[in-house]
Image 1 (spheres, rainbow, N blue to C red):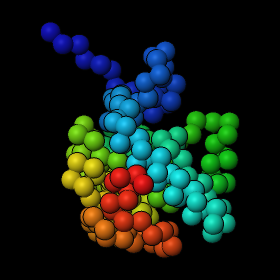
Image 2 (image 1 turned 180 degrees about the horizontal axis):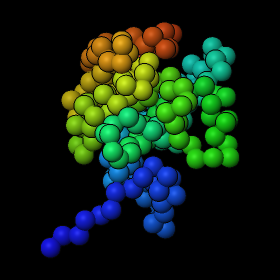
Image 3 (image 1 turned 90 degrees about the vertical axis):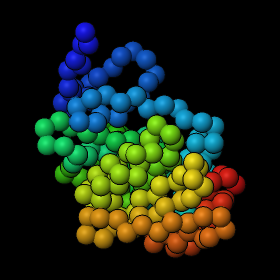
Image 4 (image 1 turned 45 degrees about the vertical axis):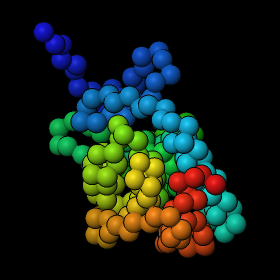
Length: 194
């Protein structure tokens, strides 16, 4: 006999603690533990974070980049709540500062982040390519990067009417980011995190 786990509301999710260091996304009212990923996964996240911060500083943009530090409330489902935590996010600095004394979650009534990145792992592949792509599109996040070390490609999603037009980059192809037009990174550099 299996025991059903009760579904959580968004408010319950924000208050949830199991007294461990485990981080959770909320997907259709269910807690989904976030794994740490491989060292390569972490290196790619850190590399892109550094690259985005460098671009923000060089261009003196009023933005900030964060590594798995901000959640996004998602429109997935009708009855139960979903909240995602992207691997890397770029958002306005003022929006980040407004979270100083509250949960670092972007709610439905707030502007979406400017850019999000998900680094694919075997356990997240379907969500990164399908579920999150649809959710982030409905939230009108202008740019969505899917970095896939499993297939050695970087997929860049450019928002067009709540749907992403996708461009795949491999090997020495230079990624063309509308958000960061001066960024001169190849897919190989991103995947190698160098």
